[in-house]
Length: 111
Image 1: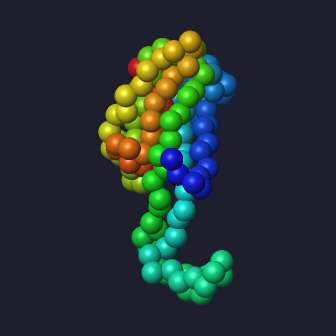
Image 2: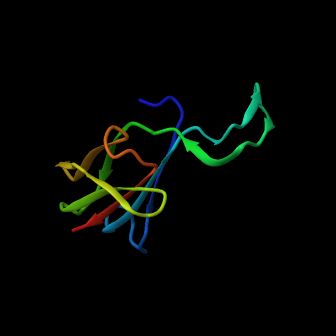
């Protein structure tokens, strides 16, 4: 649903994404410092913290051998914000990000 985003899934083990039980999903869109000033594409003033980050809304499908994944939205301090519902169909875990428990980080782990 977001027109500009990068979504990356990283295995936090030596296993491939479809085999691992520990994945970090990062979803990033527009981000800028508070009070940053622009003229077109040129930044005139850097602004200051905190950085504001656009929430990415997307339907995610992850091919996996695991049928018991817990998907947690994780806040910027590394604290769990909330658990996302997940469904499975033909070896694919399906879930939505950005509509509830908004975050740019999601931890996907085998229960």
